[in-house]
Image (tube, rainbow, N blue to C red):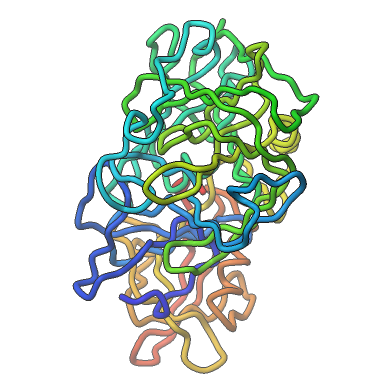
Length: 407
């Protein structure tokens, strides 16, 4: 299925490319021929199932701007990557992704650098994939800060505390894809060591060290560098150049951050977290890394902790219907291209070729309207769907939405 045959509001899980045989090749640790899921909706609360393989966490930076830019990053068109969730393939799509292959300055993280740092492993059931990344501990009771793209599409998340080796099941507290920030909570956690943070900011030439689960190995490593620019804005898009997203106010460094480091700490010389490793330039070698200032990330954390969602912040797991939206003929309804087996949509009797015409009596005129409407719902909500089948017969049924994959 080509990308123009389905509609998706959510973009970070978009496939990188689709060969003629319909199998998407993505930078994952493992690849399965499976159905991928793209989350859509104003708050990521509607799920589309696409006939493809895996997900793509890789994004390309197509433009760069900001204050105090370094010579390696100030030009528009510089390619870079949101550090993939997993990393057995490099940002250029070839070879083995390991920190040793990307940075000769990397070394095992010290005991001090490991305090308050966790390794994140996720199962992405609907994509038939696994993912790995890094996070930092915010509270002794198990609140974790990471990048949103680390858990994007996850249906099960496990988190291992680096200093103790203990693994916990994690729940999603909330996400903000536009800021690339997510907050998790570890079930049954207590007495955890907290990562020290410094929200005062950095300046160019400050020495920093990036720590993370480089290469998805489960072992923390560290790469030293300096701040080369601050207040950077990057426009990131998928490998095909689609769905651009903007992250701004970023710290740029020459530390050798690689795939799997996402969500890990960027330390200053006092051993305090000043940033969250998020992106790196692509190509045969890492030339620039980007981190979200920790103060910025914590601002999003506080909004999530308030429990109040918004157009950008989803509290908890999104609601899940389980359909793929095809191109809608005419001006009425949202045509279904496919239904995920075992989903609420399948239970209600919806099938490919049906057209959803109303939700709770609200007339649907497009797939995007349907996605936005579901963005206001939570798992457990019951909605009444009205639809017509391919023969034109009208149907209606109550559907209970379930918790979907993280967005």
